Length: 286
Image (cartoon, rainbow, N blue to C red; front, side, top):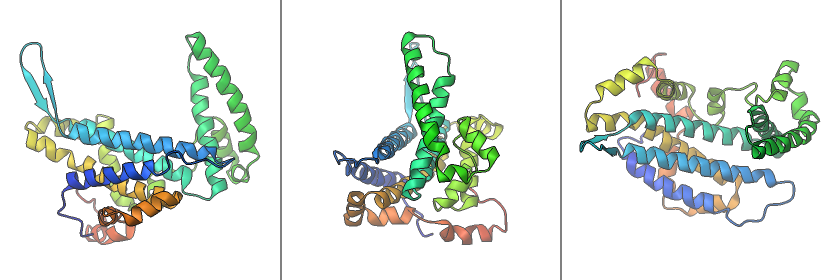
């Protein structure tokens, strides 16, 4: 890795511009029959885009103007970390759903969809509209159930895993860390960064201690760097995933002047082995 020192903020903005172009490259393209499930690739991509935009916006700081006349200026590094973690999970969901062969992707999409409908059915409906939506969800569930159970990919799961899938647990037989490795991340790097970001999501002691110690804006800004860095890394991997899935995006990436920046941040597990070998099994610092 020879990416540093770099301006993470500038690279973030550059890749965000390219991400917009890549996502829009599929706009108004006809969807072939039996391929409608790929529409959710687009929707998840938009979700990731919004999460990343929010991450950058929060990192720029906030001013709360109190009715007392006092103004409170701060950078909420905790929310930057929480948003960065959400972006990681959105990207890994995309990768899990759409990085396999066509039939595996179709099966996983059905499992994921079935799980979401299970959540809807399990909620307490308090309005007529909500009850109508639940009834529709049950009908969709029944249709998906037949397709899931008849799939060769369902049969490959153990009986225990099959039962979990049918209960609406779509993350069966894998973890975020395992999927990150399949997406090209170094396992120790991912575990360190993801664990750090989760600490802010779950309000663990270290996250609270760091917020308490970051009393001035420069320190708060430094504390956002981990979240911004992994966000840029995620963007690069997303752009490559999108380009590998849709040829218009691939053509756009190959012709882009930003391609060198994408490739700098698209470092893989092998690129980081030396860093973690030098740590002799210890944790690398963020």
